[in-house]
Length: 295
Image 1 (cartoon, rainbow, N blue to C red):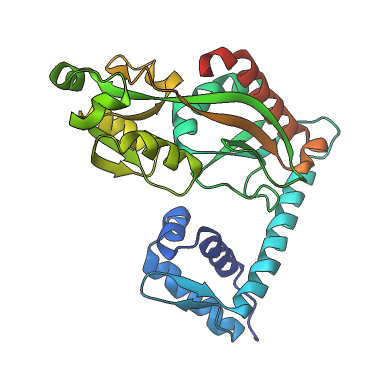
Image 2 (cartoon, helix red, strand yellow):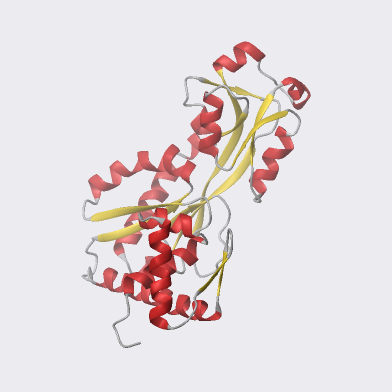
């Protein structure tokens, strides 16, 4: 390899491996998929090694690719550490802090909390990492995360900050036409909107929706909300969010709610980085003062 390494190509490769899809990576990088494929192919040619084995729908990372991934992740960590150290100055605030949360939590709650923070700490910029999967805090895909399951990585700083309840809602127009079911026995003649996925939440929802006729199955709560508002049927919604909608009605009130623990987690650098600490403490305060809203 005689010419300097294309570090942008390494970044593109790492982004692709982390999301597991050329299409998703291209969207995140704001380029076309053919352009991304050409960049990775050029990187492979430059390195003289195949990094990905491409299939019809998926790809597999080669051993050379795994070695490059490990090196690239370390480079990424070092880069972000340099960014953080550039603000070194005791308790001086500044720089970028990445917050990770699901799409539904971000849009239904988190965005509304941020104006107060940016007014208080204008020196800190917030980057939202909106992903329904669990981001890897230790690899610094984000600095602070709001999770609906207890973190399993012992190195993380984490605490339970609340309980999120999920109930079942329908649009006013749907209820006017089909009635409001109170229990599972009432669902036989109702259209249901289900959640698809492998997590416990999906199976808890399925235990209810299977008693009706599935009209639509989606992968995220926000999509379910839109489907309910469109009158497609009855579906699960975060209670605090559903109760705030003037065009929705709570149904199945005789059935128990789904409860999910809310955890606030952060990278261990929280102890040394005043900006990450400021974001973490602010979100913890928001949850503490709004605990009743969630329950």
